[in-house]
Image (cartoon, rainbow, N blue to C red):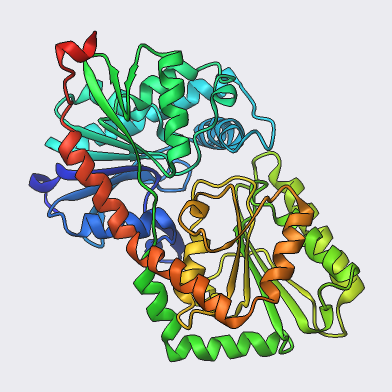
Length: 477
């Protein structure tokens, strides 16, 4: 891409670039990253003549020279090791993440973390300002970059700016604990459109913004500093067709049989796929399985449980604790209930390729998605899209955003172990006609509310509402 094309009509700003570095003897090689955001945004970018993505490379003191990947200009933001520790591991993931997930872990409020958060957000805003063409659209993503919209608007008032929060926005009583609550809200109010996964979390923001800023509310619109900001609900989806096509392939069918044989050809397979995170409820889920075995309600002789726990933020407090607890529970169940050579709990602390995940989705009779709190949870949708024969059962937390759309799942309170146990037992014994009825309905929803539909709906709202919508004199009163 030439310097003449360096300014883009569409700029995505996210904590990470859509690539990860592979260090080889020949040097650094960039490969596409997995993940819901990349899969959801990439189709929208591919249709743009000149599109850029601003983000961190994942490496301390990494490259800063823009480069092209799959037709998109990638603009790296360099972070020093101390910034990674204070901005990313500190304020983003040891303050905001636990607080936005209902304070499952106690958040830390440290001024040096906050100062780094401000400085790094400014780096991202400056990089986006340089990458954007006159009148361009800039779409900022997630909790790590909540200050960027206002900073960017101060630098480039000509831009259309959207902000989307992928995780929950907390209830007022939780959010107000943050010492820098006003700065965060005003940072987000720099956008023309602010998007949330569910109507509840959008309402939480519309409720808290006038409390900590001079914003006034009018339905779904907030008026602030002479501008109108749309606060809307845009539930993110997946590329359901990609999952379905992979699920139907002969390669996947072969892989399913390999997995089944490795598990000892059980009658029922239960599956969990999560990042190793204290919000995901993995330990309580395993304890529920343990008690079902203890009570004779689930037979370990013909049941296999597969738990994929993808490594996540190992340097942040709380993660080592949950890993130790999950591994203790898995080991205890296997010690008491496994037959020689075959484990009842098949625990993998690793990230699997997409093709292997789809094979596991096809293998699993029951999918267990029981987070204590989740913005959406795309694993639930991936499971549904991969069940092309419309069998299987989904046990889903009431507190995952996906529960709003997937009402035909077996919904549970993930804090209530008896409810989780009952749901697992129901799912294991669900008659096939009932499986099909539920799965067909959920499948229609997943295909209709796809990743492409999500991106198009948000960008359409931004096109209609953007360019610094001015509040009428009457609305200012």
